[in-house]
Image (cartoon, rainbow, N blue to C red; front, side, top):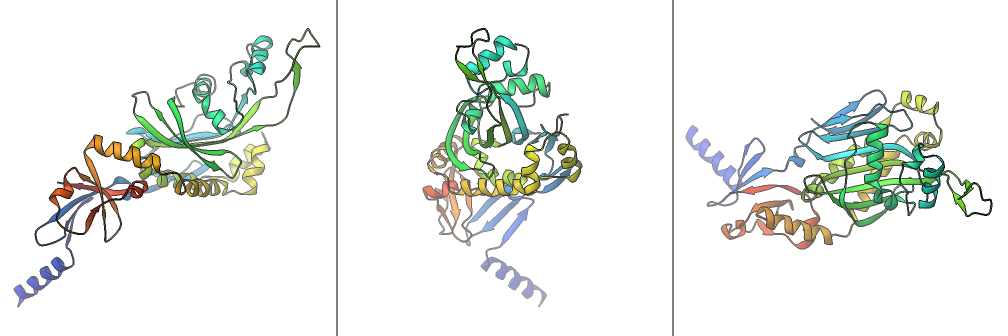
Length: 354
């Protein structure tokens, strides 16, 4: 009788499509002849932990590092990243200031105030998010040398905007772009910032000539700089995880109290809605979901060809997998099928191995 029960249990398991688990690997029996071995994507097993230093708190992937330079409240900044591969990261900066509005303004600053910060900071033209990221490397040079005094901000090589995804809640643009890191690895990310001018101040281009051309030398400020990046072929899988971290950012009452003593411009925005970054996150996610998918299709196909994958989906769960090249030739069932082009925008759930 005992043996009969065991046989019945095994038969039921077989008919239901028995799944054996080995850590993050599953072996799925799809028929009486074939098994499919699936290793879950790390993004499907991510665990989060709360970071809280008494000033700012947010959720981050477990094991990721947080780097916070010693700056004042106005210029508060932090970087969250995977210590094993810093290309997986978020950079947040509350405010950068002192940017020039024009080449003429910077030339005037360098001539009459050569030691002032305004003689060293770059020109943002056009005066928007795109213009700010055009001069990112110059900004990084200045911040790393004069503000944080170490290599804090990364450099962008061959920075290319794929698409302008629209505006964030604070008026800045949300840019989808790629760049190459110091090792020529292609990195993809979402980049946003809000460029503001607090006013105008005109001077003569030549202080000794009252009839010389008037120049506006009032500087520009950039608020709420947010970057989220990952290796190009992995960004689709990580975008939602990085966005979750942004959504969870909250400043404490202790931070707001200290900030209020220094400046009120940004504080009004934060006080109006302590969940402002949740709103920014929602707008980023909404824009991401409405993005043009032509880049995804081309880049993901190229990545698969280079790394030796073919992409399939599970018709029972609609989950997308990267399978070893030749899987569909080996497989004879109906459960797994080759994906359509529009499915290249989907994150993958794992890898099908031999």
